[in-house]
Length: 329
Ligand code: 8YV
Image (cartoon, rainbow, N blue to C red; front, side, top):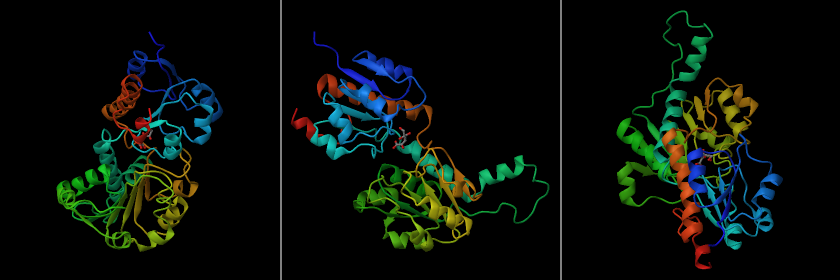
């Protein structure tokens, strides 16, 4: 029988998923609690046909050149800005991501951050724990309403639509959105959202949620100029990617109370967080945990594994990003 394909699991992941991969492949798995330095990653990737990545491993022309045996990179994430897909396609390497399985969980996190920021939940907890709660006051930790307000969603893919449904159906919100492409009428009706320009959205939304993929074009979708258009009572939520927001400009707007608050799960240069954001009390900060529930992370890991298994054993990946490489196989 032919030798089993060799794969690299670039970061520690559920043992049951590594075991499933080991039924089909010779697996070299990272057991440490962080990604390998890039030179070590490349060295270990040499001679492998597949790699299981988790978003921190950059796959670009240099990696592809150093690893000519590579056939597939399976990302355990819906975002794939760590992949240079055109370079992968040119090298005949399949890219897969993990869409769909984290949609509702990530939309929940968007609402968690919106609610927490608007209602000052974490600020209130810090206040209480610090022993500062000694009386009632009419204006103690008063915030903004979420229910019944106008929700502006920038990025109307799967997660944006899941947020729209929550807003319209659960919170009685008036939902407006901006996206590269307007949704077909039926989809718009299903999520009860109205398409507007980015400028109109920023001016009229009571709260703004960002759910766009990161690219050169979406870099700093929200900077000083956009923040200046927002209402002083508005909450801004970023559950997409660091770099969609200019974090320094946001910290300045928060410090000067030019918007009410923000809820951020992702940061420019994470896991480092801009010190000016850390100094603001009107921002809720979470460490990129939008998809972090047990069932969802298991589903993401299994989907990435199934892409490797499907492609390397039968040529049938589940969620390919550049299926055109299969035509040339
Ligand atoms: C992941 C994410 O946890 O899916 C994405 O794009 O950002 C998160 O769900 C992260 O990328 C690591 O896999």
